[in-house]
Length: 470
Figure 1: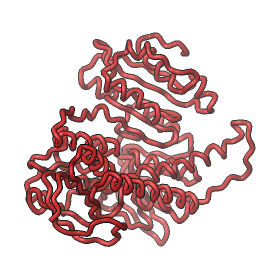
Figure 2: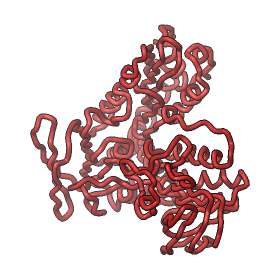
Figure 3: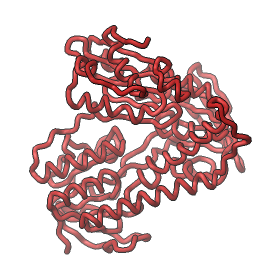
Figure 4: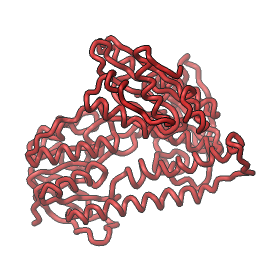
């Protein structure tokens, strides 16, 4: 029977990063995977979705070539080629994860794992084992990390059927472009697919039960995003829910209940259900061992420890925010703590969120509402992209950077951005928050010119009445 210092169930961003870090620390590590090497992110999530969005972004620019003094006649989209490119990139990323695990001498075990007793894992055989992976069997480990990720949440009446009602799996590999598309849910997944299909020409309607699109975002940013989406031709119904679906041979008619109690019929070729995800906690033996589970995810402390000694959980299965970078950081913290290193528990307020729609949205920390609800006296800075020379030169003048400070201490409480490439810019504010930077230090930081990042500097200055270019 193979014995490990750490055995990790799941090879997604949390699992493989934890495995590699543990191997770097000299621990004997094994990883169990049952379906996708690298997990959902490189195979069916983050990376292939960004590949699709890149194709639609380029198509958008080609359609607007005249805005840049260029000519491009009758551009077209080859959906099969777009999907093929995305799937090729997914395969490349998955193979890369396998290479990194082998490079770090991590044992790779193919099968479905369950924890039969403290320190004991049984792996049942499943099909599809990659070359060089160890077969199923019984294993022992001093520490077991559950990194099994999450799957699409299913609402009654909105069950996916892989033909007419899609999850993100089917949404990534369409055989053809749906002429009419209904997207249920306006979180990151829903809005990204809505942006992708709308840019390629689909008629898109988004139904959201909350009072704003992208409900976790700051209200001001969400409102700007909604206006941009509607300007691009999306139809957005807020405070609305799908009451029922009636399926035809190749179309679906949804009955949507609106805020005022009225009902609206929407007929679409396809429906994307993007109403969140739920942790993969089933069939792992957790209940029998007494591992605490709440709202479909495993309860942990800031270092991945569950209430049962020797069992840990990281990533989506350990609760929100369900983001790959959160999983990676949790994996690192978890194994470093196991190895006896002094580590700081994760501060979830410093985890950035990014949505790769058009325009992009990125944020970190408290929204204005949450900061006010927490009792802070605020100084808020706003700077529009129209005041930034690089953004105007790029043809991307629609955007905003909003910064929120504690008026008493100058502490940066939150930053919220919408516009071109803000998902690359948000990290500057994340670093600032991690270093406990004050407004004065940010004001004295030199930003290069001309760059869109200058909007970050100006937003800080604006919070204190010192903005230059507006």
